Amino acid sequence: MIELVNLTKHFESTSGVVEAVNNVSLKIEKGDIFGIIGLSGAGKSTLVRCINLLERPTSGQVLFDGVDLCTQSPAELRQTRRKISMIFQSFNLLMQRTALKNVCYPMEISGVPRAKQIDKAKQLLEIVGLSDRLNAYPAQLSGGQKQRVAIARALATDPEVLLCDEATSALDPNTTRAILALLKEINETLGVTIIVITHEMKVVEQICNKVAVLDHGNVVETGFVKDVFLSPKSEIARELILPKSEAVRDFKGKRMIRLVFDGQSSLEPVVANICLECRAAVNIMGADTKNIGGKAFGQILLMLPEDEAALSRIFNYLDTHELKYEEVSEE
Image 1 (cartoon, helix red, strand yellow):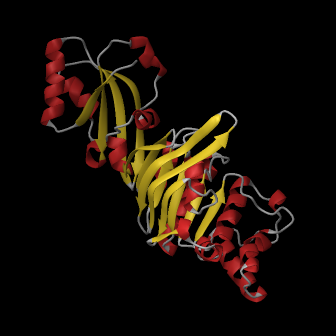
Image 2: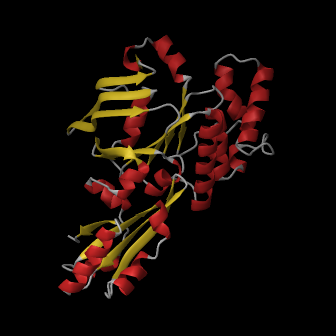
Image 3: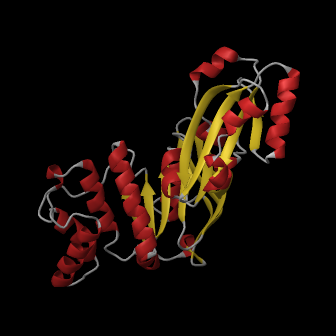
């Protein structure tokens, strides 16, 4: 579907060359909900704007169904862009137009007859749950409703791919969950491939099946979301995933492990079993649970006892029960 091959984007500035994206290669399959995550300044927005050539890459290829967009003529690129829609953090609605007319806008540009525009816009607004707000102006809508209008507008050209650039960053948690659920439904019912740009791991965990971790313009890790969660390889992925605990810093030098639970093991009373079967007291320093792909996942940060015999029993228990863990240290 979409393949980025050695994609690089540099900007000239008064202080020199800014390397926004460096030699990125990714493959996004049809039907994926693919997350691209990183901290602020990682190059996420630049990368997604290179996918539809809103930013032209300095070098590399952007392949859409095997065709390099960088080699297309302006007329060919306009046709391709109809298959790649985009929604933004700031919604980008036309304030002087109603919800219905905002959704009609891309169809107007494409020369769709007026009657067909209205029929389709009504259908799309019904899909996003706004059939009762057709004549409302953006100023009369909540943030979540504005984003729903933006999604309906993005679907007006029957795209194959939907790019979401921090689409939920300006929304409250409940609205964010609702918008993400809507995007997942669109992916499943309409078959639209979705690329999600975000700095929040919880967004990736809620709807994405695959993820790439971006750091200073470089892809440092990529894979299925569950695999990256269970065993993050890069420092930035660990920072985004590991449970946060300020208390850990007060126990520098203590021996700690990160226990990771997937699917079935998340339902087992592992900590209680360690205390009972290993006759050892452990302290829980941090924990959280996730729902990834409809399965329960979780992680617990444990501070272990200093007694060597107790440590031996704990590690033997973990190994015998094939539980996934890793020793961690607080720098």
